[in-house]
Image 1 (cartoon, rainbow, N blue to C red):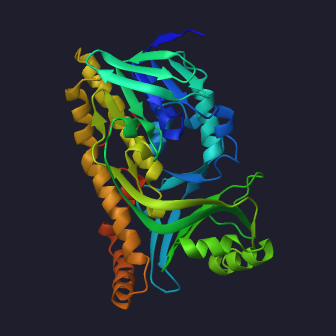
Image 2 (image 1 turned 180 degrees about the horizontal axis):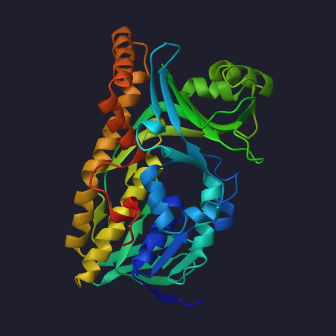
Image 3 (image 1 turned 60 degrees about the horizontal axis):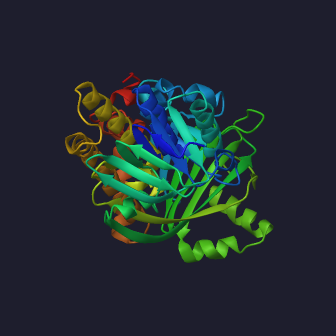
Length: 410
């Protein structure tokens, strides 16, 4: 084992955003080292993370360009339609893929399958070194570079450190970057279910006073469309009581919440729970440092955009780094990183505000707001141009897009 290692970029965090970042940097011609406390095989197991992610259309183009999408084989399910409703009201909003370009609005991918695809691609790239089972003991940053001492006594020198280490980011904390954060006092239950009838690739999101209930289409192990991922959000105290239920009682409540439009529903996985909060780093750069993904921003999952926003961070950062490197500029220099911060600030702030407002608007029983939001759903559903723009936004095809999100190489 070499004690001293040198690289272009040190990435802290081998999660889905961090690993994708390393692959994007490799395509841009950079060497990188990823460090993580958890080993790759452990991360790719279902017991580690039972969630599924909604991959927007633009994100899928990026993953295809990076060679990751093909490694998923058939482990993804297209979302052709999205139906949004308010509690038991007859008012709804329906997005249909054939109203735009007849292409999927997005795709559902189990996180474990995505991590397996990432591991396969990482193993084929000589420009990436993965060191697992370690963390950074000390991190120093100055004009000469980044110097990280690992818990295994290795020392890494890099031009830039990227914090992709999640909501509890060590990189952000050690840089003393402050955080705006508040607790939604909501918790999400995530589990997989099977049902009697074909879901026809339609995603459903029902809004209730305690929080949204999402039914996200997936394929089962036999390739049939009778499996869905459930994201069940409610007030934390109510979720605590639900989790105390016996299986029979839980399944009864689940069927009540789900409805009978897909027949009888049965849980086929353990239940995972996640407390929900809003958080936003007050800056995403510092000396020779950039934050991406959850280390930068933590969204409410109401719109399923958290992972997509992390990929947008990665695509922008990779493009900024390669453009500046071609000009002979320092990839860890202030002007380079400031360009990244300016590119991502508006998009991230807008999405944080949108998801926060959406959750506050729908997660209540205030009568005037109920009338307003039900009317809003109906009007939006009937206004073709507005609905089309919202669909393009959900697909990730709006704004100043980095090349990777357009399916172009760096």
